[in-house]
Length: 603
Image 1 (cartoon, rainbow, N blue to C red):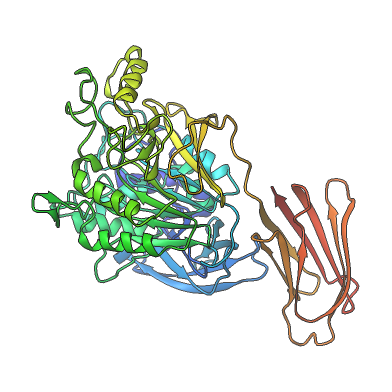
Image 2 (image 1 turned 60 degrees about the vertical axis):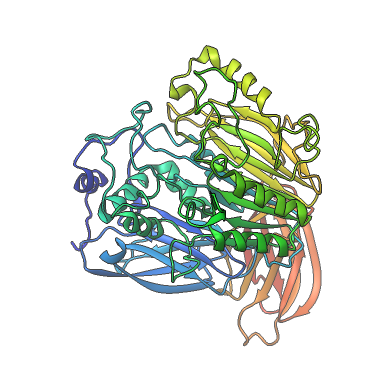
């Protein structure tokens, strides 16, 4: 056979010649698409879809389909992608011509008719749309060796996310000797060439929880130091290439793939800016004796975009902690160098941090919230150019804060306890740290998990969700929500003890039209309506007559619309329906029953 139709264990043995740890296997049900599917970098009219095929051929032509229907009974777009060894047989399509703020389903098919898993994705709204609610997950520091990806599992269960934001260290180049929870045999070595970096990405995709999180939502990602080789190493370009091959990222500036910074608009509600301090630090001077952390070009871009953003909220995705973390006067056993917790964060580029914060302050740019990763702790912080001056900033109220920061811990990589600090000292460590860092609204040193960001015009809520990493399970704990109000630029000192409500979302389950695609129906989540349209021009005498919606559980007719509307489009308001499954029947003068559709409404 042309494909490696062997067990996934045999396929993996070709890569690693060893034994896999618990909960590691490929998607053999959808062979030869063992490594799943994903999507990312959503725009209003396009999104990247991705997969990878296992083959022994020199090249393969792979068909792809995308549809508003999960049964693909009507296709919004389709095409063929040729993949080969130059991209490690990954398939990466930037699909265009899509509708804004719309849920889509996509899949891939080889020339023998075998299909991949069905992925779910979502386009962004138009930049001018009056969006009332957005919701996304924030993730970083996902070492596959340090623990189980239970956080990914729970993120994939959430149906109401617009995207997943990953802030770096998506893969890890080495195993931390203090965190050997799930390590294959033989012991992994640090990648040093292109194929080894590709193999590390492929290995990660044997985790079913990561595959499901990639399949369930579009991703917006940035790299960090463990995703790439050392900047000056011979294989640095190879590590970048593998990252682009395996993540659904649109290269923002093809002339220079290191310029990964980019912007995503989510209506008038929020703009998302992804920035990169890892590859651009220490290149340009900001003063005669201090370096930029972003470089002059990226620094200018970010400030200009923030100045010109018409969106209510400005979200900045960033690899490193921005808020200062002083350890001056803390015991010698407390991590850090006696001055800072770490100088690999923005604490190592204090002049650049102050220049950015003062730019926001001096230009009256409000509602800026930084999302950060890397530090392996939880931190909810106000951002001030001098948080230690009580005349400049108040730690008790937040007055004087310029912006907000949310760092929702590592998903699996080691925290303070895994660094060897005694559990008996951890409460003391937290109290001492808070005493010398007045802008730290909340910090926590041991838990693992992710964040959920809930955005509405008047409020942005940041939720902390923690889960165990030592066993594979579905248990997680909500650990309060922190919120900032429009125009305040600080975190409120009160917290939310209950999670925010799910985002109103409408999903279409199936399209079974008696007239063979005579109708098209798709959700319009921005206004809680369904859009119906006739598809064939030959139906010149077609008229909608009656639309009925039945609750499937009870069989009860819950909505009936009588009209006499000709060929074209109509919208049905279903915003008042409760969560649940419904059957929608369309009657017309063309046939007794023109369409029979099954829908699910999720509130």
